[in-house]
Image (cartoon, rainbow, N blue to C red):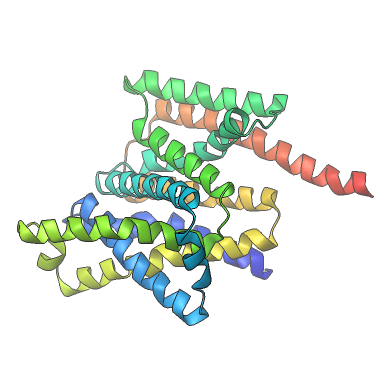
Length: 294
């Protein structure tokens, strides 16, 4: 396995196993877990930046209001995505969370069309239509839209769009986002402590240590993914990325015994069909490109 594929596989493996980690904090509210994730992520990233002596970008960024505004928006979307995901895991909605990341690639295609003016090929329209039919079927089955899945897919899709057009790299961008979120997280944790609702203080030492590990557990997969993105084609990276929701779906169904009947399977099958069509089209175009160049 080449270094890029190894980095990608390790990142996706970590993300796929996230439900196992967040299930350990069922006695702590999702908002508090989110706040700790912000705080410990920044502390870990600060150590990485100190070790790499990589601070010049922060001074330059501080003098660019438009850049700060853009990253403030992406930070809010990231916090929303993290918070919804943690809540869904700790409320036995892992299958719904996995669906959000299955539909995310197709959300990206639609956002590219409406926001960036990118052209959509007929195959892509068909893939999006299949996914929309799947979401519609799940809505009809449940009597309401799959809000968790849609919220996760949309927040991460818009977040990815903002980061795609941003000028900072993965490490610098995530560091700036956590810097902007840090004051709100600290104020919220202080408020919890003042009102006697601090779950961290009442937790066991092991739980406290695991919460502190949310910093490296958050940052390391992102850095591995950034390294992989520089070494692998987007088509291969996109295909490997399906490891994450697949692992989460299997954990939700087989380990946590969440309901997944025939009706729900039919909705997922439509979305998987759209993804298969989209992926096959991307792989075919990637294969034809060097043929044409030759």
